[in-house]
Image (cartoon, rainbow, N blue to C red; front, side):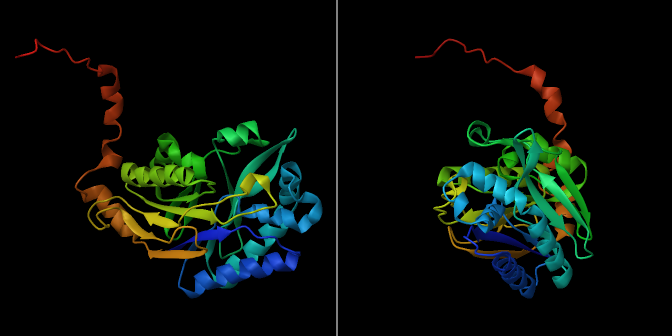
Length: 298
């Protein structure tokens, strides 16, 4: 299979038709390159807020509500595109109403047969807790596909190993990590998290990003990163684990061939067996050894 990971700019869109045309262009480009699965980034759906017009400019709360109000529109567009091109799509995430003045950061998943599902962010960053109305949604998402079971963790979630481990134990062989990071240090935190999860669980991890400035929406005003696909650095994968990485801060698709059998083979026959040996940690945790030093020698 081929997987396409987006480095996606958040644009000001003048009309619903402009949104449809943009998404259609992006999906067509990846599908024409042979991609079977397309992964858009976290908060790529904040651009939907611009459909409310100038009233939202510079107002984070207004942008959040306006983006949430366009969920059904974007959901329908993405479902139709998945069917038209015969591809699976993880759509750009956006806030949805979480009740009592809160929102949930949600990404839709779309199958070629028209079926839809969604994945929610699990753990909020400090900014999302202190300066935004975000809260956790449904538990870690796992979806059955013709390519195998796919797990989804959104951005900061990828930095917490037990979330990915739960998905791996439920059968995930590929992990999708849509992200939105406003600084290089944030991008590298998610990147390191993705590579660590690929190592620990001997799986392929797909990292998508937002790129470019957004002068009208405070929550996503700066965006840095590079789309990439990672695997475990072991037999059947590159020595550094990087299947493919795109250029920094440059819009476009990064596409790589992914062999699910290679994932299964490395779990059975790799130089190391992180997935299998994971439970051994629990037995060792109570046995922390405080080292005792003998006398110093002259």
